[in-house]
Image (tube, rainbow, N blue to C red; front, side):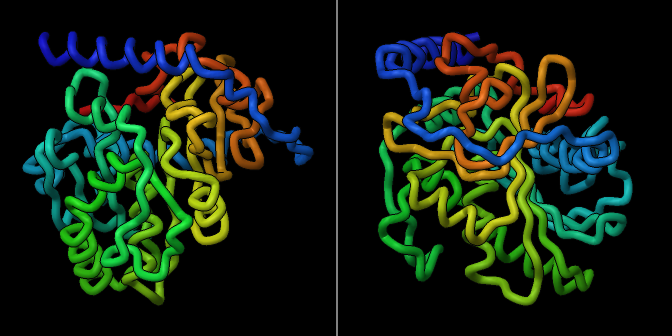
Length: 299
């Protein structure tokens, strides 16, 4: 009860800051590439990744045994390799192999509003450069949310070792990251240390993670889909007026259930999240957990 109360106070305080600042409207130019609807088969192709992202909220003992209820039952062929985290100082994570998709899966726990420290991390809006020891060769112009950078670094070496083990054990040629901000940082981190495989990233309710240079780097080097549900306010935080920018790859789920592919960075159309939720107060926090094609985030 205390955690929930403190979390709500933090969100209210952050919302007040967001509403006091200029609307993000996007100082952007209109994006001329058309917005397109995904068909049923394209939508259903994301469903396994939604279950894997949802399982990221489950405790390490359950994901290591792949005995985490609905999320695990929906992906019965998955072979877990490693898991970790405590959901407080270190977000839950797990790594394993899906023989049906022929990919190594890395899942990181996303934000839950009733957990104090992850919420506080999300509103820590100081930017920092990426650590050269983890991200060799990355330009110092690339800056990211310091809280996310710190959270990613805490499990980075363990995750890397688990991915390398999985690739060796199963001969996989693809690695897929799911989750949200930490997963996106992993999608920049891992290719710096692993070669000879392809990478893709599917994330849900993604907050903005870094600056324009970061967004441009992701666009150039990461195969990314970030899926936003209806009026979820998390993807419009931190605000663009603070220098944060989303990379391309948005898919926005409409109230009607239609999934729309929104081209460009922070597309300002009202059919995309920036135009649909111009301020925090215009959003609905309950949309953050889903559903994403029937899958609710959580364990």
